[in-house]
Length: 402
Image (cartoon, rainbow, N blue to C red; front, side):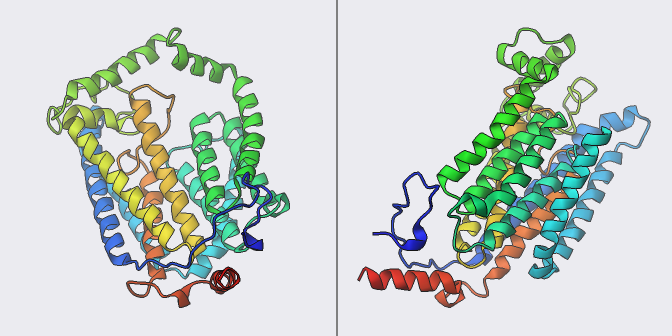
């Protein structure tokens, strides 16, 4: 037997969902927050060291001081920390109010980029803001619909905005950014309690124009064929692919030592940015790469755990940090696969490690994750803090079924 409010006409199970038991797990947000802060701090420090090691040859070659790019990265990091503190102290009501404003601003700037051929939001530092602003908007939209989604009319607006952003990223000829946005949107729809049928419908509506756009661009088709068949690569691309793989192989398990890499001396393009993992693997070895990936998995696990535990208390922050963790995980995976030439991921930087202003948005996202912990006033949340609708629906359901 199912409750009336469990019905979803998009659910492929036709609404036959299992009954939910009234069960609230005690949760100590302080432990979760400590693990998250420790992991982020280690990643930030390691990122600064790796940026310096990968960038000082380029600074010297340009006639600058060897620590120039390190100082720039530290400035970006400090700016992100100050903005993160401001967001952390900002009332939640103001953050919710800014969500649609930031989303519409990004949409207008992307439209201007498309019309005038600019790339204001198509850089690795600024595209993070696109992800964050749209993720915040979807989080707010689904948080305001506690009754769930039962028909297509209820999600027409977010679906239209999602397809608009997706197509703009494709029309601006950045397939990788569009792919990350697409996966993030699907995850956000799932977190917003949209049924499986609704998610599949959105995927179909987005994939059809997306595939058409990719196939209509000769350069994009040629790039995909190059990576699929590995046969008609240009000399420059082929040499870069060989050098990137050689950096991974030459590093072995322990690496050559910090600062002793040779591929950063003008051999690999963008080695302090999107391909910084090549330098890390050469100098620190595969064991260090494995340690970094473990830290990212710890960050993702703590964020997803927090999102699950605050689901019934603050749907907005639960949805928001779910989207943030998804974007970070996607970019880490795509960057690593691009460094070993498995996927065409040019332009995707490694969070915390690649040089540039992207660290500013990452710090703001980390502050939002920490702010979600303020939902808890003490370890172990009482049922009284749950939303009135959730408690009433559970009590009615239990009384009807004995």
